[in-house]
Amino acid sequence: MQTPLLELKDISLSYHSEDGETLALSHISFQVQPGEFVAIVGPSGCGKSTLLNLISGLLTPEEGEILMNGKKLSENQMNIGYMLQKDHLFEWRTIYSNVLLGLEIQKKDTPQKREQIDSLLQTYGLDTFKNSKPSQLSGGMRQRAALIRTLALEPDLLLLDEPFSALDYQTRLNVSDDIGKIIKHESKTAVLVTHDISEAISMADRVIVLTKRPATVQKTVPIELEIDQEERTPMGSRNAPNFKTYFNLIWRELNHGE
Amino acid sequence: MSKEVVKMSTGQRQYLKNLKRSRQLVQLARAAIFVIFVALWEISTRLTWIDSFVFSSPSRVIKTMISMAQNHSLFIHMGVTLWETLASFFFVTIFGVGIAVLLWSSPKVSAILEPYLVVLNSLPKSALAPLLIVWLGANTTTIIVAGMSVAIFGAIINLYIGFKEVDPDKIKLIYTLGGKKKDTLLKVVLPASVPVILGVMKVNIGLCLVGVVIGEFIGSKEGLGYLIIYGSQVFKLDWVIMSIVLLCIMAMILYSLINLAEKMYLKRL
Image 1 (cartoon, rainbow over the protein chains, first blue to last red):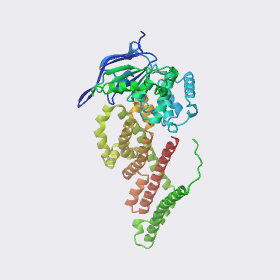
Image 2: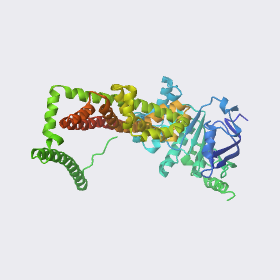
Image 3: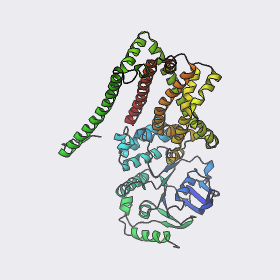
Image 4: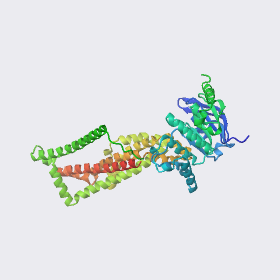
């Protein structure tokens, strides 16, 4: 078996405040293989986002370790892309300079990179909006621009923190379909955090169910939908005959012990 | 984005008409207040209801203005006050933003300094002016510092609060893109705070003018503040009232300039 791209070993973390400490994550372990799309579902407030903060290195675990390609996070030069709940496109920048933000910060703004970004913008239908302000774009297009901003840094791993939760339902379905296709097309490894079971099943190869706080891994569910490979888009997946079976299974696991 | 050309409905036309009418009414009322006030002032002095020696009159103010313009002393006094105000405004802006950035970058420093800032901000700054004269001498520097002293503490506090209110998720975004604290300042906090900075500047320009006039009251030989004090001492109340009118006009123009800059910035956005 090949080395997993990401490996969490026995991760625990507490929040500290004057009123005392709260155990947020307790002994969490899982692996993500290269090219895999993993979704993490759990009740709200269970520490899903904290998990992504740990993987991205914004937080350090109190116990356990996180390995990327078999190496410790701190010794690793791997690029991690992170998509937040809102697109956070800056209103004082054009779409193009918003997309360039990451490269600007990492001082990698070269002509080759720009060419790459131009082709990304073209492929995903944003090239005519290069000089527009974010407010001139629809919610879906904004989220696409935010994804390109993340992809511009060529991340080896994409972390998605409920990236569609700020959108209305209809846009949300369209955008998750859109973003799901882009991630597949660019063959990225991704970890999606969501509280939406359908979204998790429709996008992921594997769903990890977390318990209430303190979060532990309740169950890992590999998703194998009875559907043609080209139909396996987030939208198409929802038509799979066994979609509902997975839904019920994960629903049961989420409510386990209640 | 193209806007569709739609034929205007009667309701919409009526609405726009009403809107226009109410705006015109506001403009008219404003002008009327001014005209009535000036006319009443002039008439009451002409009919000696009030003593024009004490209350001056619009015609006397204009006459004084013309004669002082002819011997250029008017421009000297206005120029001095304007230059001192602009200088103190410039330094308040620079130091205000600089110190607010320092406080923002170090929560410890800001926690330590907070009570001092609050006290200094609430202190009536006119109390400092006599001290400044003794310490720094009766010169332009003192007056510029007096102007700064009125505005600087409020500016620091308001800018710091503005910086703190920047969406933490936007700051997190910079970190997820591999940025450092410096990047969060330059790419998010400062650009996002431009409206706050402009708002603070709008208040400061007036405060600097207040401080400069206080400074001129007690330590200068030129400027509109000097003219007010000197005029009241030698009972040339035409000078005093003319200077007050000029200060009104100056304050209005300076404020509108920053207002204009703000409008231009918001339009560009």
